[in-house]
Image 1 (tube, rainbow, N blue to C red):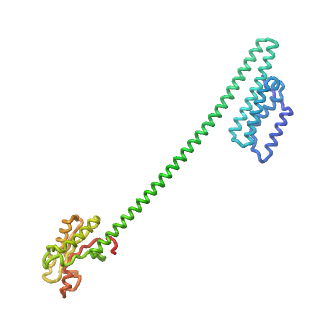
Image 2: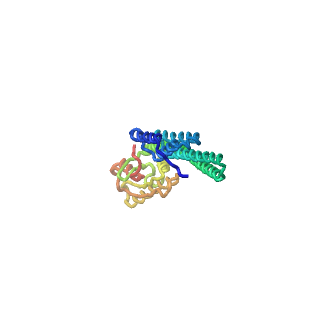
Image 3: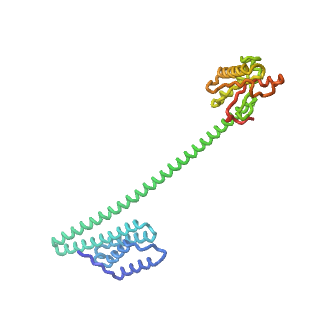
Length: 327
């Protein structure tokens, strides 16, 4: 059976209302699905057969279309408005199908024709199919709502994870800062200890590096064997080198100008090696040490006095120029 749509005064009034709403700058743009649902509802309301045989179904259809219109005015999403308009349109179809079925039932009741009874059954089946389709559409809407809720939960979980990661990063940064402060404090302590050690050994800075001078009291005159009185000076030097394992040193021996130059050269070599042996015996690695004898060259004072010659009879330990700043 073909549907006939008549734009009677009620439908025309509905269309005029739609036009007025669209013309207002404060309402959203027109929605095609909503306009179609309103047109079909107006046509059904103008059909006497529908109003006579499907009044309740027509009332439900009117409520569904009004719900879609309200959603449109409330600026809901296009998908939501389309879905509600689709529901309203399906209810209009249900009203029409119900009206036709009940009208056919009336014909069957009056005429008793088998053909009309079959037509009624067919119409009822079609109406049931439309109802099932409507129920499926509503179920799909519920599923979409569930998906949105799950997306919200996932977003909340992601934000919570980001907050935990940020808190962990801040805690790690604080630990790193504390560790850096502790390392700096230890470095400062080592530097202070190093300066105190160098000061105790009367070290001085020269162009060759840091120089510690061990005077003539280490040896007897003309001898290279260390005296017991010089053990404390050697011990200070050994402790310094053990505290600074990266340091290397050159041990240089010197004499005054009394005697033959060759003898003085050999004596300065032996004295330098004696100091090296003492340091190795106190735990300093031999690979960190080297010796050199200068004989009577490079005097620290004049050899014309006893005091000057005593100053020249010495052993100097020279550290590389990267030694720490002297106090």
